[in-house]
Length: 165
Image 1 (cartoon, one colour):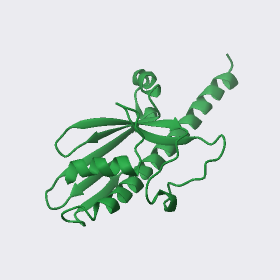
Image 2 (cartoon, rainbow, N blue to C red; image 1 turned 120 degrees about the vertical axis):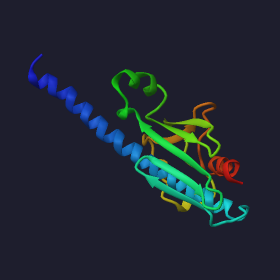
Image 3 (tube, rainbow, N blue to C red; image 1 turned 120 degrees about the horizontal axis):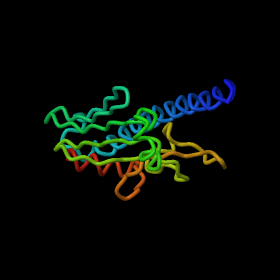
């Protein structure tokens, strides 16, 4: 094998890591948008409508209730962040994992998967989440690992409601 043959796979891998990093960072942004839409829905039913706040630090998103100090944490890890020996097992599942920790400490895992499902729910059409479905354009969604339910505004609203209301 000559140097040119060795460089081609390395360059392709480096390009993949850059693209995967962009994708995962965009999808963390998508989670923040979904959370804000969900919080808008919760405002009328929340005992203190302005007390829930979303904060993003890198690939970790927190939703906190000021009055009670309760916090739910959503921590995203990309496949490209994992050690080589762990990548194969996770790669079959999706491009990234989000560990959701409820205020009481219970954990659930969401997986970022390539799907053909376009996000839905009130307000999505007017948000940065909405994209016209274009043939051969991949769509990625966060999905619950346990049942493959797509994490859309409806699911996230119910999740946050169980955490805080």
